[in-house]
Image (cartoon, rainbow, N blue to C red; front, side):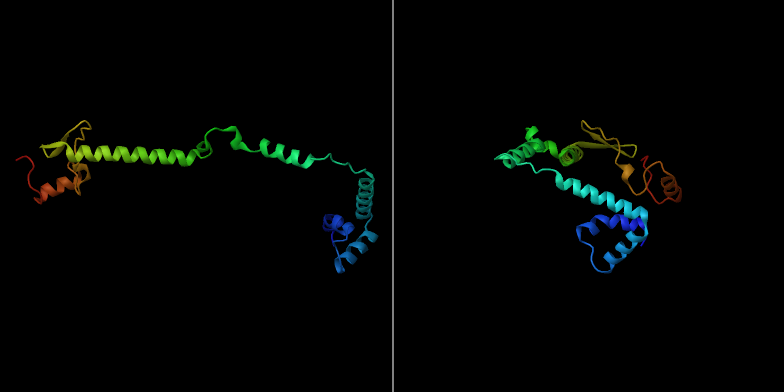
Length: 161
């Protein structure tokens, strides 16, 4: 095994999590490699020093107070009065959809209920929106190359009548 693989497994080796052939390979590598043996001895020394640290007794009710503080410190909703603040994208999307529906309804009603007049082949609506021509949405809009071809070929009636 290579040194970097051995060093990654040293903690597991020391804890006894490594068994079988892998444990034997690590042990034989530690016997042969002075750098890995030094890393293992430093780890072993650190482990023994950590065992000498005295255990601290927590006061009664410490865990409940700690969990209560964690819950209030990290509960972001406790800082806001309105829960919709957490969902700005869906709220904005809903607002845009409602505005689009209202605008579409208004324009649709204006086009249908308004009085229309035809002048020089263009459709004019007498409403507050003043849409000048719906012929732009025709199969062959007026004033286009296709419209000129259709007139030239005589496939459309003359609009000047």
